[in-house]
Image 1 (cartoon, helix red, strand yellow):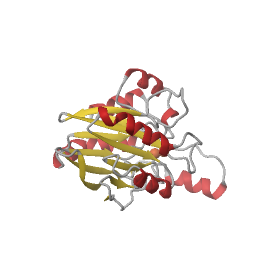
Image 2 (image 1 turned 120 degrees about the vertical axis):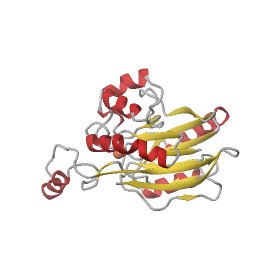
Image 3 (image 1 turned 90 degrees about the vertical axis):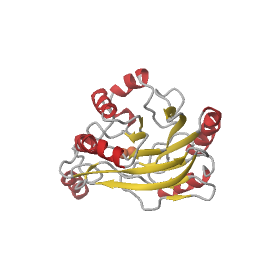
Image 4 (image 1 turned 135 degrees about the vertical axis):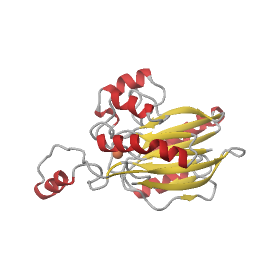
Length: 257
Ligand SMILES: [Fe+2]
Ligand SMILES: [Fe+2]
């Protein structure tokens, strides 16, 4: 089976582009299941109910989040009413939402875990111990597990890949919005990539209007972020899972413009 994973969808530009090209990408690559990181979809900060509904309508089956999870109040209602949206597992106990979910496709139970790094991000629980314990909990309930590691530091992400090697079918990075060219199958069989990239405006600074960010670097004054427009891209990965072994046999980078 083939799984499409889409990198951080940023603002209206990213949402519109994903809406435009989803059908073509899914058909061309015989996609059975599609997951996206949606932490930036609504103006760059969080996910509104309206945008959640649009993303479901265009054929995305499940969503992971990140440090912008709580950027929109709607997320609390989404967590209460929908079962296909998760936030980083290692937020403190009592935080709304769940850190993992099970999606169904082609008769398989696919476990999805979302965790967040601590280097240059929030000082939350240890992502390594949290991920390991959750994999152990989901192992018997699922056929295979995918892990979205939302983190800044390449070292933390690569270390996580090796830490979970052999335990998850794939560990992929999100958050930096810049796709890395290091996709590989690790020694014990886990597919890995440091960051799958962003879906949004090409000529932007990580999805935000470039002039605003340049001004901020020049003056150090706070600026109101606005999502960029113009020519867009969709970045992500396509995983091929061997249905007899439930292992990932191929990981392919996708950059659709
Ligand atoms: Fe992001
Ligand atoms: Fe992020």
